[in-house]
Each structure stands twice: as C-alpha cells, then as structure tokens.
Amino acid sequence: MSQPPTRSSTAKPAPVHAATKGAWTTLREPQQKTTSTITATGPTPVYYNASTKTFYPSTPIRSITPLYTPIALQDPVTVTKPRTLLVVLDLNGTLFYRAKNNKRNVTPRPHLQAFLDFIFEHCKVMVWSSAQPHSVDAMLSCGFGDRVPKLDRVWTRKDFRLSEHDYNKKVLTIKDLEFIWDAIKAEKASTLVKGSVTAAAAVAVPPPLKGSVDDKKKAPEEEDEAEVFDQTNTVLIDDSFDKVQLQPYNGVQLLDFDEDLARAGTDCELLKVRRYLETLIYQKNVSAYMRVHPFDSNAPLHEDDVEVAKKNNDTKNAVEADEMANLASRLEKSSI
Image (cartoon, rainbow, N blue to C red):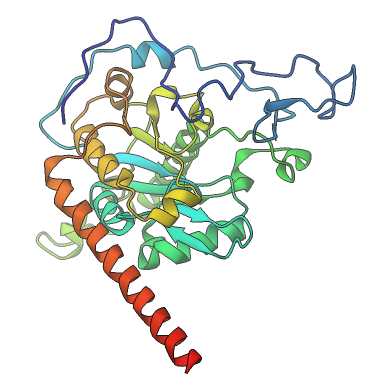
C-alpha cells in the first residue's frame, strides 16, 4: 500500500468524506440554548445536520481531551511484533444495510466474512451501534453467526448515556472511546481485587508438590491479565466521521453502505480496511499513524485483492443470471 507524504507536526482536522463534506456544522452546541429542539426565537428545529434531520443532543458535546492531541502528534513508529488492537465495529451503514421500508431485510457488506475472520484472529473485537438492542441482535444474527460469543462486548444505544428524551429521538450520537477504555479499566481493577482476595485465602493452604498439576498453573494475575487499551491501540470503524469526533485519529471512516451499494454487490471497502489494519497492528501508536496516513476509500485495491473482488463479482453475476433464467422459465410456463 503506497504511503501518502508525511504531514507537518501541526494537527489538522481529520478527513471528512466528500459525500458528507459541508453537510455538518462545526458548532458543538446550538446557537440558541433551549430545553427543547425548537429555538427560542421561532419554530425552526435546531438541527446538527439539516439534510438528515439529525438533532443536537440535549447534553452539550464535550471538547477533545487535552492529552489526546499531543499523543496523536507523536511520530509514527513501526514495531516488529504485531500488537493486539481493540477494534470497535459499527453495524448499520458499515457492515450491513437495513432497508428503510423493512428493517428485517438486512444485507451484509461484500467480503464481510473474510474481514471478520481476520479481525477475530488478530484483534480484540467489540460492537458499538447506535441502534436499539433488538436491531443490533438482528444484524449480528445475520452476519456474525458463531462469532457473537467471541465479541469482547456488545454496546447499543443504551451505552451512549443519552437522556430519555434523546434516546427516543434522532439525535447525533458520539462514540466516546473513553467510555470503553474506562469500562475495561474498571473490569481489570475488579479482576485484580478478586485475584488478591483469592490469593489471601490461599495463604493457609499448603503449597502444591513441586511438579504437580497445580504447581504448573499460572498465577491469577497472569491468567486474568487484561490489555490496557487507549488511543495507541484502539480503532473505531464507522461510516460517520461525526461519531468519532472526540478521538478523530482513531476513526476509520468507510463509505456508507447504502441501498445503491447493497444492490450493486461489488463494494470492496472491507478488503481495503483489512489491508489497513494489517499495517496498524504493527504500529506503536495507531493514532499517530492514522493522523499521518488516514484510511482512504479512494485508494486502489491491493494487487492481491483484485482477483478476490473479481471472483466475488463473477459469482454475483452468475447468481443474477440464474435468477433471470429461472424467472424467464416461469414466465414462459405461465403463458402456455
């Protein structure tokens, strides 16, 4: 994969895809602060995105954490041993398309299975979707199969800490990765406390004989040791840059997998993301690398993926040809 020229050390705004460029405001809260979505001066709704009729959340959007930018401004460093990344997956518009007139009609993005095989082998994987729990379950059952139990966690709309008013309204939902990092830290701390209690209780128990099975077991702190995740090893994959605006250099923004792409069946976005992740697992600080080399949907396919994409297209064309032949046969029989 060819690398873009290195940027200057001055932080620049994270890239916005051409399809959404200019559609979103840069305001972090409404110009007219009110308790509703109607301005104080008239009946005009306060939209964050007027084109999609997405409202501002009632809770103000916080600023980027002061320590985030200096860490992202570090020079990218390639390591020799692959690191375990935490990959946070969006669902609708990223991995699936849900028909607007029939939410049960879910279309997986092309090359989804190969993509999932890769990330489950090399990364810790979780899902965070702004959809409600029942919708998340429907999408997972459609494309994840027996991988669902392997997910580190599944977060839904309930995990955005929205007010009751916002939960049931089409508001901007921001995926604050600090929520995830804090949750993992809390779980690790809880595990360490439990391990300490277990160790204290075991003091009165005679040590096992040397060479016994118990003697070969790992210590609780080794067995339960969890990775520390932060901006250096976390990647959020989403079709909306606005969802990741609080950690802009940890976001991989894909083309929105919409109805047109779902119908075409020739999308190769996940092939490109997989190649990008293959590079990221060898980065000491992914936010530094992603600042300098952001994911580019317009980049050409890797030469090894061209044949994969061609086979997928050939298979799709063959299936469509069979469907058309069957339809023609049925029409012919019905006219006799």
